[in-house]
Image (cartoon, rainbow over all chains, first blue to last red; front, side, top):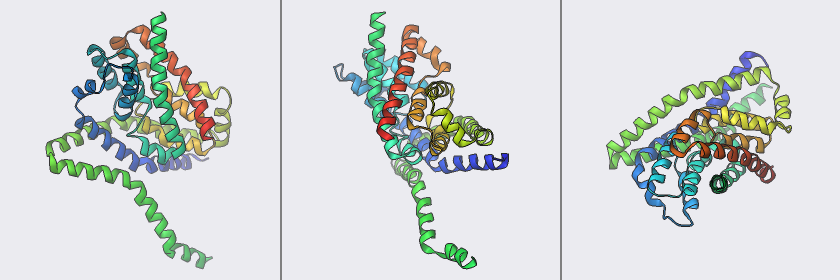
Length: 137
Length: 177
């Protein structure tokens, strides 16, 4: 492939994604402002279901991973279990409810839904295994 | 030949499909803008704050967008698509997906165009899923995880995620492909 052709092809690929990217960024900006950070701890119940809640909550929220670590650290201080917080920070980065429409359009419905559902379940698994290993050390 | 060309240009069906496709792609951002408008009517300060947050995200993602564009152009220029797909679909493809996922920067959605390109060229969905899962591991962010959760947690979490990413990729491949 010629250089010019390669650049045009890459440009087309990016250009096709522009509407979806605009939508995602607009949505992230909205959730970032509309969901106050102090509400995060209130969704946890200090029960067996906390890892599930953590994964679900992390899936819905979007933004920089840095925010998830800061929020996760705050949740730990407030007494939320490490398994729940780990599930929360892993799901925050691996599951994307906000980015799902774009993922469906760009990578296919079956792929996007399967990957996100699996990532949701795996966030809980990762949390349980990580904390289990840490307890053994 | 001219007749065929003319019929293609004037065929309302073809025109209609194109317009429909264009509209469909813009449904998502337009619907979000409508939500912004509703919020602006209810609480204009919140809408402005959200727009400011959106603008700061846009500024942050520009370097990643340029990086993805450059990588796509370079891949198109230097590597034949079929060769790249067959190379990534081999056993070491999993390792490449893990390393590429870890070292890649910026938000996950910025990589969708490149991944779409790879998918079209026949790269397995499992490899793409493994890449996306490893986007969660960021060496630059490790110091922050250590500060909040400790060194042992950071090391164990990174290893567990890298191992499970391959299992997840394998499962996605079995289901999707």
